[in-house]
Amino acid sequence: MEKLSALILAAGAGTRMKSALPKVLHPILGKPMIKYILDVIRTIKLDNKIVIIGNQKELVKRNLEDEKDISFVIQDVQQGTGHAVMQVEKELENYNGNVLILYGDTPLLKKETIQNLIKSHNSTGAGVTILTCVMTDPTGYGRIIRNSQNEVIKITEEKDTTILEKKVKEINTGIYCFNSRKLFEMLKFLQPDNKQKELYLTDVIEMFSKKKYKINTQEAENQQEIMGINNRSELAKVSELIRKSILEYWMRNGVTIIHPESTFIDADVKIENDVTIYPFTIIEGKSIIKSNCIIGPFSYVKDSSLSNGVELNNSRVIKGIINKEAKVGPFANIRPGTVLEASTRIGNFCEIKKSHIGEGSKVSHLSYIGDSDIGKDVNIGAGTITCNFDGESKHKTIIEDNVFIGSNTNLIAPVSIKKGALVAAGSTITRNVPEKALGIAREKQFNIAEYNKKRKKKISHNK
Ligand code: UD1
Ligand code: CA
Image (cartoon, rainbow, N blue to C red; front, side, top):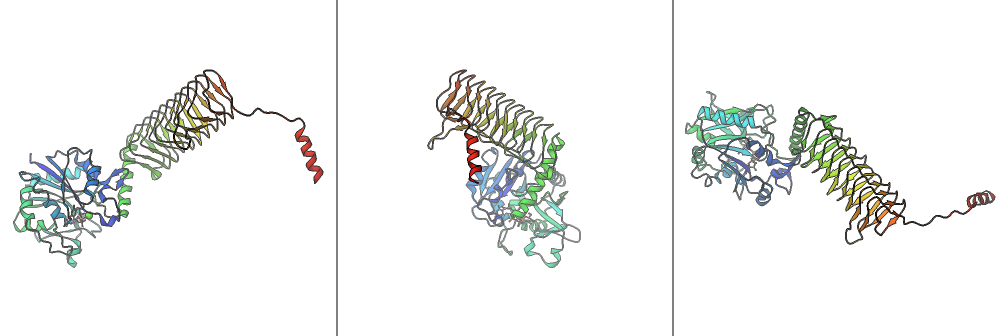
């Protein structure tokens, strides 16, 4: 087997993105653009994986920290694609094999296409194999120029094409498999004699042709796959294709998606079969959704895990853990650090923050529960508020198993309500309530006899 190394060019500024963020870090369905190509080549056996960085190199590097097997080569000034590849010469000094050239901004490229390119290169013994594509609209791409024997003689960049060359529909995808020795031999001769005053990697092709090094081409199966992202409009187009392919994948794996047009699922989300997702639902980050969950409509889940049979309706969960068969919503806001145990029930207009809600407990209406630890089978009445913040720091509320909190209660934290206790509706609780006790903290009611009768009489008299 020939040796194989991959270079991923990612040093460019991505000027057309008009962004402070380097182009290759722009997320697509929650994943930085460059990670798509890195994920694809993970399935290919490689001797070296080199990412060429330059623009905001530290930031790019930091975002790729978890990619253990890649090395970085720096191209400090971006003088063109040929110049970029020249920077790895030292890294590959004693290397003799093939070099695969890829880009950080082509997230749709498929593993099969790369494999076919390598296969074709190896079987023809070519000096270079160019991945080409016949485009309905070739605007912007380098054109593959052939002689009368149909042999490739050069690649001409759009900006440098003649009128005749501009009509060529066969384009350079920018993806190649090179013989490393021949590549580095020719790179030395590159000259910036073109409109952009850059060292074009594409110019190496003409040199190969003149040297009679075999130039082979392999055609990409579809035009979409090789699409590079240069601006935000292309970012949106590519994102849309990836969004659809993610949904397609999950539908084929047994997930019901009622309305794919309004459903967004990030690339790193995991979903089990027999989950149903209703319209206008967004599931982001590293969320995990287990079997038989029903999510949506109008729901947002981020970096959360939902266990079997959870129902989440018109609600949001961020960094939360929701256990078996819990029911959330409509209109609930589950904020970071919350764990809802099995069979809990969080109802409409409830906000839960950094709290643990024990099995079978219910917070059914209009409540705020923050920094709280709630036991099993607790009932939190409508309108209960944990007053966790005194203006300076946050305090904890502890509610033990089988407690019943009456409606419209304020629990001034830090405070504990012990096992089996009862808190009367309308109480403002400032002290702990002992086990099985009743805590009541509200004004005593008194009734004034006949008061309203007299009042009504008075009103009618004055009319
Ligand atoms: C390049 C090809 C063109 C091909 C097209 C396919 C050249 C000269 N042209 O053009 O034939 O049709 O890709 O999309 O190669 N980069 C660096 N350092 C540099 C310059 C670029 O790392 O000094 C990186 C960029 O970050 C980018 C990639 O190389 O990821 C391609 O550069 P770009 O300027 O976008 O090339 P194109 O003009 O698209
Ligand atoms: Ca490009």
